Amino acid sequence: MQQTGPAVRLANATDIPSLVEFRLTNAEAHVALDPAVYRVPPRDVVARHFAAVLAEGAGRDDAVLVAETSDGRLVGMVEVLRHPDPPEHQILRAEPSAAVHTVVLADARGLGTGSALLEAARRWATDRGIRYLSAGIHHRNSGAVRFYRRHGFADAGLSLGRRLVG
Image (tube, rainbow, N blue to C red; front, side):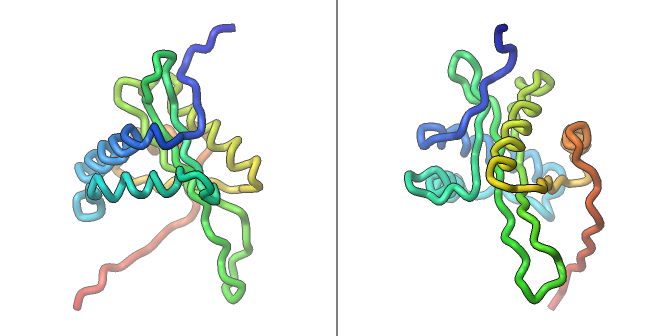
């Protein structure tokens, strides 16, 4: 049986330039959604982040997986960022959980790339005892909302906030 979509694998240090481009492209799209909430981080800061996450000997509490076409082109990524357990003095039960952040290049959307990345993230997380994945999606990002809902993600409560002045 021939593989139809890109292969998904753990990212490595040689992938950092592509990961930086994914993050910055994603940031620009989010700034267009809501510039009061999002920003484009400095390129060098993003590169240092991925270098630290992918460094040899890093704890690997978090993961970065990439989707790679048969010709070696990276077309997407997913980060799996483990949440810390709540402190013992709080009322929430500890449940191993993580946030996922998926980015797929525009020309690779609709081809199963995001689904393959999310499934690989689910397997990676499950293998490490993580029992709950969350995806923080801006309400105006209707494509991302549809994508995650198609993959079993549902509303998980309500987050209220208030900006403080002064």
